[in-house]
Length: 237
Image (cartoon, rainbow, N blue to C red; front, side):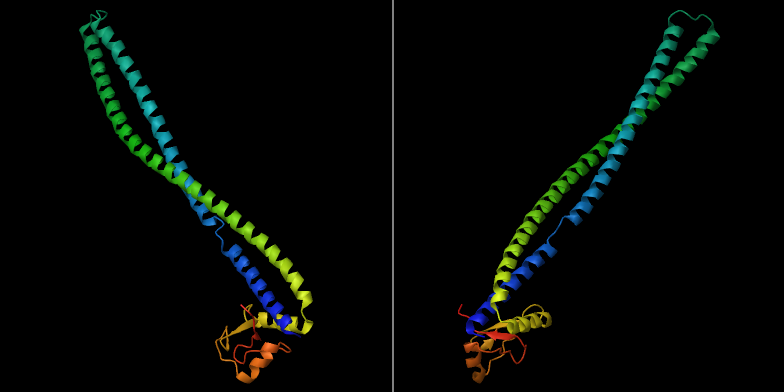
């Protein structure tokens, strides 16, 4: 083994860390699932409001149609009662009673329609507000999905490039060094190599004994940190 081997080993560590970072980016990227759930809820709320509004508007049209029928009947009976077609006092009295009843019915319809119009106006406001909220959520979901696709696509492309670098580095390293590196990665959460900085292990910050520093600098054998057991390397930065 040579110092160049340990330099390449450090490059392999940097490459593997970069791959792990990109995998973390992919795993932690927001794919829009939460936004999609909220959008479904908003769309359902909008659909319910629109259905209520449709029902009330249909009820309004029916009341108006019914009131027109009542008004037509009242006009017909008024024309008959006061148009000289009825001479019998009893029949006229009966018609006038019916006309009064129809007038009251018209007023009831007018009151119901006015009350319903207030309800429709309030419901239209709520529906419009919910429609705006839903459109805003739909746009938010689209932005999140677009960002997710761009982020993950970029990360996957970089992973492919980094893997190519890794495939070039590994065959250049002594098998013994590769085995020690892979064992260390499994044991130390992916970080098997530590650069010596200022006479200390950069991972656990333990001072390296002076007698061991020449061995690390020469790179003729594997030297591990006595504390964290990572492979020590000296790299010109």
